[in-house]
Amino acid sequence: MTWTDDDSRELRELCRVHDRMMAEQRANDPGEELVYKVMEDARPSVPEPEPEPFTEYQSDVLAHVIVELRKQWREERDEAIAPLKAEIAELKGKLDAVAELKGKVDALLTLLGQRSFKAAALIDLPDWRKHDAA
Figure 1 (spheres, rainbow, N blue to C red):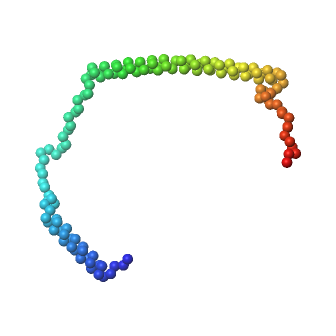
Figure 2: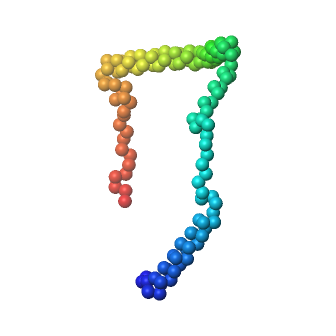
Figure 3: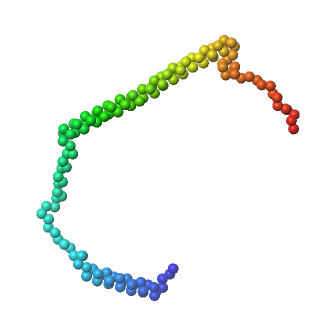
């Protein structure tokens, strides 16, 4: 877009009108004047310290209650876990027995001339598929 001489003249006139309106507004606005204020003490006031929420006795009682509750919760947790620990120990014992039996089976298979239980489990099946099926 190009500006013609008429466009430039019109823009200059609009800017002059705008500047005149702004100057009139500033002259009529009392809020623009400075207000001087004298303060006795310009430092911010120090807030009062907040009182403690509990007395020393109340704090001691709360601490004691919390300790006792934690102790009770720990005992309840240990009671709930005890049967699970016993079951885990029993299953570990059974797993050890199975591992021992597997070792004995492998030893017997070795004595019988086979390499391992896996080798003894493989057998060859006859090939019954039709080779000349079209």
